[in-house]
Amino acid sequence: MSDSLERLYLAVLAARDLDPATSRTARLFQRGPSKMAKKLAEEAIEVVIDAVNGDSEAVIRESADLLYNLTVLWASAGVRPEDVWREMTRREDMLGIAEKLPKSAMKLPKVASPRVAARRPIVALEGRTARKRH
Ligand SMILES: N=c1c2ncn([C@@H]3O[C@H](COP(=O)(O)OP(=O)(O)OP(=O)(O)O)[C@@H](O)[C@H]3O)c2ncn1[C@@H]1O[C@H](COP(=O)(O)O)[C@@H](O)[C@H]1O
Image (cartoon, rainbow, N blue to C red; front, side, top):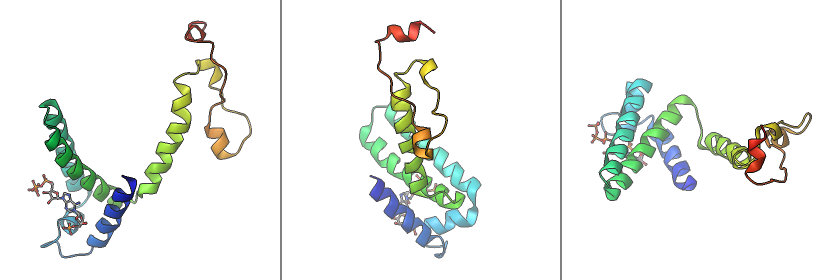
């Protein structure tokens, strides 16, 4: 999926300078971040409504529109897809462990490389009772 989004992002960047009369993307850039944000919010609401209605086909279509409008907003905000993937990896490294660790074990190592510092130490779990002692 990230390949598709990255290709779309590059297409959006390329379309930014096209004629707004023929390019929706160029028109969105011409109208600015508030219009982009409005479209993104509209798409998010359409996804929600279709999901609540159990219309999975519509959820698929509106999700593609949502992702399109998201990449346009990323481009406008100077955010690249790889910036988002990096943050998702950071969370995957941390939250995947943090959900199981008792709070006392979540002290970051004092000195470490940025990537290691971002990871919480892995400790042997003593089962769910470990949480109750805090
Ligand atoms: N991936 C998309 C893409 N997905 C969705 N959309 C447009 O976004 C619309 C969905 O938003 P809306 O539901 O608000 O559409 P709408 O209600 O018809 O439009 P408005 O009345 O709200 O303006 C769709 O109808 C499409 O027209 C897209 N428009 C362009 N792209 C890609 O963006 C690149 C640049 O294309 P242009 O913008 O056409 O230059 C190309 O790679 C395109 O494939």
